[in-house]
Image 1: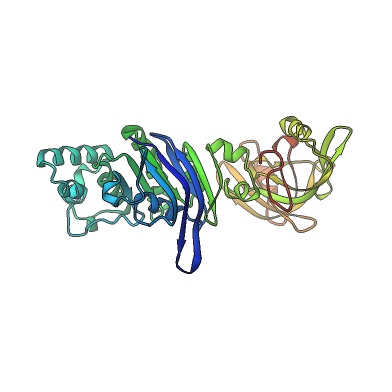
Image 2: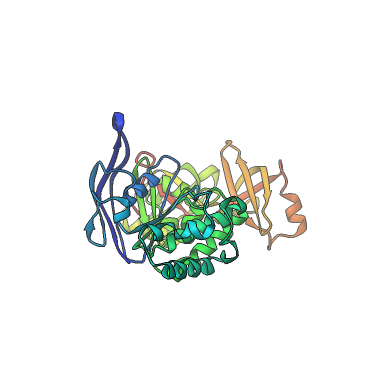
Length: 375
């Protein structure tokens, strides 16, 4: 088992294209860390630098206290699972999993023991004599994971291993990776563009944009206290509602007036505003769709809207509604509290009143886009 430390790591390609900038991160022994961000943010490049598949332009990478900048991938004691499986088509599942052990000239009985144990853990014992072409995508990915498992490496690297699978299989494999982590209990570094994978798998999440770390934290921290507008919008599905409004401070109390409503900033958010000594000012207000609720006409906090899209998701409705000014708001409304008549009234083109409480509001600076309470 091992810790991983990246210090001032930078990657510059030809023509001064900067892929990763000043990356600093300490990953603890046996920690599961997820790199997440949009395509081109530098997450896979960072993983490949840790693996030794990309040269480091600046900075240092340490594995278990040893600087590995100049070590070949085979000497770093890491195992990697790729997005496209990277299996040898002419070899059986057993021989694919045993390949790296054969290169080490490991005794046959030890090879057999490791491969069969990994296959049993992953539920692929019955496929050991098959070739990859006879397997489904999920089965091939299990083989790729098993090939990495048998190496018993210090660090386990996974580069978008589920992106080629359909939604149902992706959910299943995500659960299996959680169980796998409990069984082999090693240091995991996992790359994905899917924030659901990041939230469900990671002990900590590293959110990246344009080669820079935006925030590092637990799933709860990045969800409840995003440091800027990018993190707030990237984490959560559907993404956070954001709109410009004015934060007003009167007699030590705060409220906002979006779209003609009046909503007090109370609870913890109100206390934080006081601690920050925040005065009246323009803000970008953020409210997550799951915190939007249906309101009644005449309620001071009600925002009049017109439904443009109503998505039935089973346990909840995703309502996309436009305000009178044309701004789009998204609300996740649980169906369990709605009568059949209520649901029938929430059709495309129908009027609806939405609201939220001051306890769920996020406030961002319109220029810097930083969270005024948590940055």
